[in-house]
Length: 248
Ligand SMILES: C[S@@+](CC[C@H](N)C(=O)[O-])C[C@H]1O[C@@H](n2cnc3c(N)ncnc32)[C@H](O)[C@@H]1O
Image (cartoon, rainbow, N blue to C red; front, side):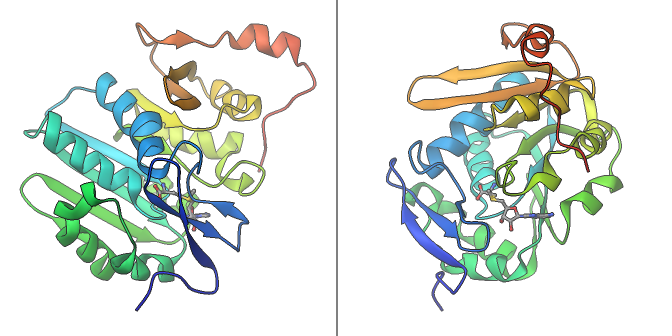
């Protein structure tokens, strides 16, 4: 069986890792310029890892897609903080995509994760002493309502706000805020003012994730973060009074 089908094609991204293109959403799963693996590490895994230091970490990966955020997280913790227990929860609407991931051309860094990749693709769950991973085959909006004050980290990595607005609304982020611990952090590639506003309206402080070799991204937390680049939301709101957050 091959990965490609009527709805998905493979694309080589700039860092040498493959991503996919969705014909259904007319969008790539990752920034082809930043690269799939690089985007995952720089915009999600590393900034969250640096802010959250705990023996056990609960992560919400919205949404599983090709699984880069989950897989890069496992690898990064193994390399840098192997004693941490990771619990990763990830909803995904596209069950046939998950089934095909056993055959996806992942970067060679993920070779050591083959057993996990196959288990998630075939069973939707993986468990060992260090790891618990659960895929939920269904709607993320429904899934997140099961959790309260639970997540230390949320990777907000849905298709873009214009393509998949239901996962970027003020009401959606209200559910995310409730599902997260107050000291938790949310990472997203989106720097859209509407995204930041929807988070801000739910009590998040907004920060810029800026670094060499990748496009700017956003960090958010319901607790103030030290040593992070603050986005002055009140100033931005006064400059853009007509822009509203996306609503359900
Ligand atoms: C940009 S991709 C995620 C990329 C992924 N984080 C990765 O690293 O490969 C967005 C994913 O959201 C899924 N999706 C769209 N709407 C959804 C929903 N309401 N609930 C769950 N998954 C959804 C799509 O099927 C797609 O796989």
